[in-house]
Amino acid sequence: MAFHPIIRHLFINRAIWYLVLWFAFISITANLAPYFANDFRYMLIEGTGDFVSSFSDVIVSQYRHYFDWGGRTVAHVIAQSLLYMGKPAHSIIQGICYILLVLFIYYNGRGIAPTFKLNFLSIVFITMMLWICTRSYGEVVFNVVSSSNYLYTTTIILIFLLPFRLSIRKDAYTLPFIFAPLMFVLGVMAGWCNENTSAALVCAVGLLNLYHIKRRTLTLWQFTGGIGLLLGFLLLALAPGNAARMDFIEAKGFDFMEHLPRSVEIILSSIVFQFILVAAFFISLFKVRGRMLHVNDTYQYAGSLFLAAIGLLSALIMLASPTVPARSFIGFTVFVTAATVGLSSLISSKGEGLLTPALCKTFMAVACLYSAITMGNTLYCYYEVKQDVKVRESQINSQLDKNIKDLVVTPFRITNSKYLYIADVRASKSHWSNRILQKFYKVDSIRRSCDADGSHIAYDFMPLQFVKPEGICK
Image (tube, rainbow, N blue to C red; front, side, top):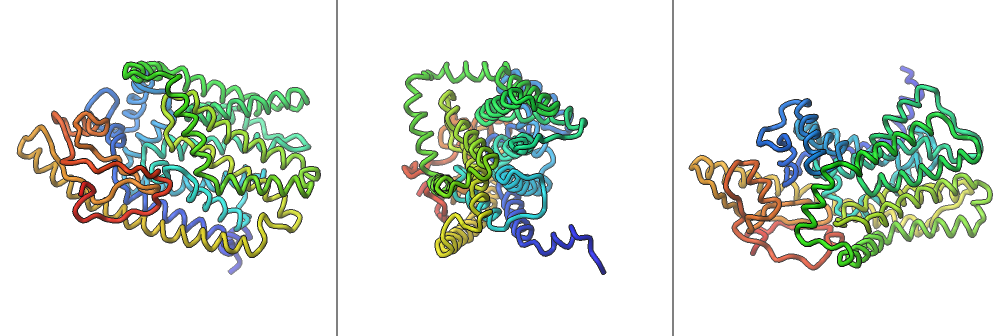
């Protein structure tokens, strides 16, 4: 029986099978990962205690949310829709989104249109950089609400960006007329994603469009895409809920100038924490420059630097934010990875490698060993946390049956790490996660019986966790 060449290629392409394994891992782990904190908040219609019971409820909820708390409507529509669908449906979608993220990092990096003809080593490099370098990986990838804010939005941004990335070439990159309205819609979505990455994208696409205007090569889809992007970002940045949120932060005594040195420290440390990726980028850059490869293909070189600039700008924009969480640096990780893939393709086009064959094999062996151990540990720990959640639910239901309004629960046996996101309630009733659960269960309060001592080690250096049979407080 003869198969179509594309089907035959899918079966023999090891990069495809490698991605299938990643899809399975992400989907299974996302299915094991319990709901925490904001997940419970977004199960409810904003401003009420009623559960989201239809997609129309999601729209109503996000309309209220836009005016009450924040402008990330695209991200939170995704979050509430996923929570409404429930498991395992949203876990499978999570796996699909992750594979799309990897693929569009590859397409943007290499400056090519979507294809199933994938370079295996480039795909492995992308997945290794994401796994090793992404800060707060468990929160960014496995938690429903956080992944909607970062994993899904970054994927949308990469999809929108690809035609612009392809336009950085000697000949004009044209698309059929139908793409003009499509790029406008995608632009609105990309601009409406999250503040730092969308802002960096607005700057980059704006400058690129100005370049095309100067060369008189601006096409209709570039114009509509740019207008949509700017409109989406304005809808995000000017949301009334953002002002309400800022008033809440300032009421707690926030001072920007006092906060600025801490923001600088976090941004610099976030870049340092990704030293493997940063080193790979600069090794690629110096090798391209040293071999004068940028002279032979200035457009691929310029496209790679274009991506790196978006990544760096997305990190620097966090200086203007009142909070600088580690998860917000996913844009830096993704775009610098894509830039490194682009520079590496220049090197490989000359039959050379980023590293010597021996060093390349050593790096791959160490990276694969690290990944195998940490991925296995992540699966195991999320399975154990899921058992803890079953005990927790039994404790809560038992107290609710007795009409107890001040709930007390025991601690889990596992705490946070790089790959585990556990936003549990605390001993203090006023902690933000406690207040969310209080509203969800319609009780007077909920608290944990004790608190664990905080760790002075950054989660980035805690890739493994182990079960503590006596609980994390002991």
